[in-house]
Image (cartoon, rainbow, N blue to C red):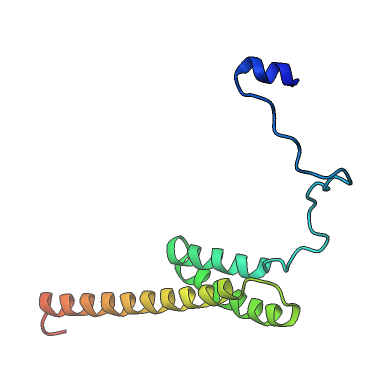
Amino acid sequence: MSQAAWQQQGWGAPAPSQHAPGPQPTAWSAPTHPGPTTSTLAVLAIIAAVCGATILPIIGSIAAMVMGAIALGRIKRTGEDGRLLAIWAIILGAVTIVAMLSATITGIAMIVQLAEQVQPGL
């Protein structure tokens, strides 16, 4: 935009450039070596843990604990990210298995108690 156009708009003259003539800064580029990647096995372990807590209670929880343990060893060896994912997969899998076992034992005890109330001699 010319100086006359600036003055017509009522903005006055543009400020003189503060940059000294020379090379222009280059555009941003991606780093040549990005940081460590997240362990795929740790991601699969946390997905299995979530499935174990919702859809496939025992199978998903066992798979989460096994994959989480394997992922921890692999993460230690390779330096990948995902350590917390693997740890949480193991914890969630174990908590789900304990909850399922306690619910099963409680359910069996309730059925036995109900059966004793219906037929006290058995």
